[in-house]
Amino acid sequence: MMKAFKISSVVAFVFLFVGHFLFPRPLAQTAERRSDAPAAETSSSAALIERGKYLVERVAMCIDCHSPRTPTGEFDQKRWLQGSVLDFAPRHPIPNWTDIAPAIAGLPGYTEEEAIRLLESGIAPNGKPLRPPMPPYRMNREDARAVVAYLKSLGKR
Image: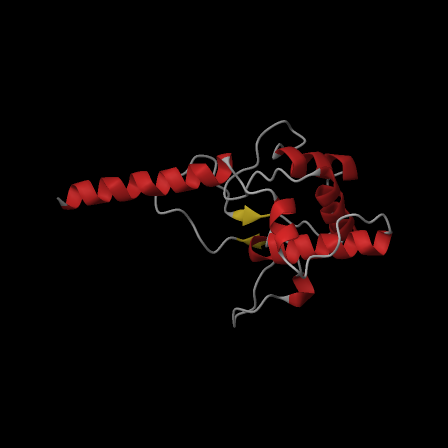
């Protein structure tokens, strides 16, 4: 009986994990439902950056993996989005799992167009899918442009 429970638990976890990556919720839909979401229909640079900040920090929650924490558990503001060793791992092996979230402030190593394509398709410039636990986002172009504008605005810190 206990073995059947363990097997069903593993199957449920795999279903949820795979479903998360195959059927992600579009960020635009999530943001549109929030009343504090900055307007998407904007062309001004400052507004685009502000919308990108909102998407990075409040919707996609990039900070959770890409920003290190202090010994007290708070985000280290001096190393905001500078990459971090992940403090979690799957209970069961997941192929191609990464243990380190890279720095994304300033988008080092990416052109704006490469970063936009990555956020629209979930495929890295090398033609490979993003490594778990990074979700393969399927942002619309405007949201991807906003995220890239915000990350670029942070420069290399």
